[in-house]
Amino acid sequence: MTGFELVKKAIEFDYPERLPFFQHVRPQAPDDVCDSWELDRQKAGWFLDSPLPDDWGCIWGKTEVKNMGQVVKGPLEDWGALDSYIPPNPRDPFYFRGDFLIRAHANDRLFISI
Image (cartoon, rainbow, N blue to C red):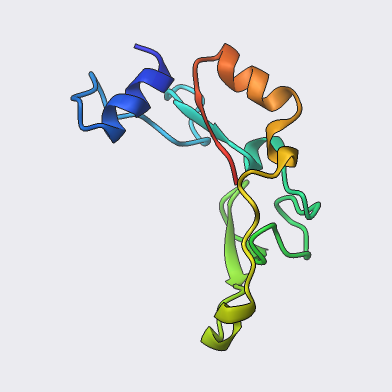
């Protein structure tokens, strides 16, 4: 069963043969999905250790774990900002171009955009 099929069955509560994995730490473990950070697809130009906000408006800091980060400042820390907050457009063509979709499809993995 491919990663895509596992994820689909899990979402539909259709008893996949195993739980799908979403991890990028242990190379010996399966990885059934890939996401935009893995492939540097931030329209704002942000990537991992950048001091700039990501596409959601979050500022990230490094942690002790390699390739991991933690949001240190979010765009909605003040609820008064909710009325003016604009999240990224999930239909923006920027997120659907490049070879990352081709690689995800070739490996039968589900792609999670932004």
